[in-house]
Length: 246
Image (cartoon, rainbow, N blue to C red):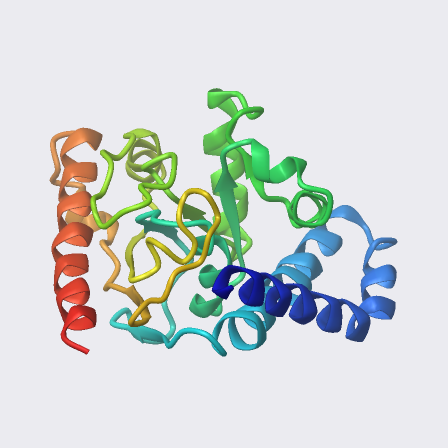
């Protein structure tokens, strides 16, 4: 029953938001590509995510956002653990203009995939590796953040999969700040079969950035990814324990 109620609530929140922004949305479609992508990221995708969080999810689960990075933070790469399908919506809590790196199939969805393509989201299955440095540099130079889930797929549990090294190699090559980010509590909201279960809450936490002057001393991208993986894993263990105590 909870699964049906959450899906209905999410559908209603998306429908209401779409109705409110229909005219501005149609206008955005006719803008030049760079301006269209900017508007889609900051006006449609970001705020649609907030609508889903506040109207679609929060009636059923407590969602807390915590920020240890402070204000006036430079654009960078947000490295997040990946427990469930709701992670993509929870990224709106960061309140920054960003593109997400996605693994192919979300880009094929009729509604979300279409808008993600318009917003300039990056399909990891279609972009040649040699194009990433130029793409990342262009985004960061235009104050657009990149959100990555280096596990590559949902863990579906409190355990974290190993990280891939690519995103850390790019950060080291281009000198981009890296923001470790933790998502706890939503491993069964929904589960891998997209069924929603009762949860004591979801906590999303942005940790202080790891700046180039810090990771410049790391001997390799492998060491860098291991440091970030362990940092997120340890913080998530604390967050999971806090949720269990509620």
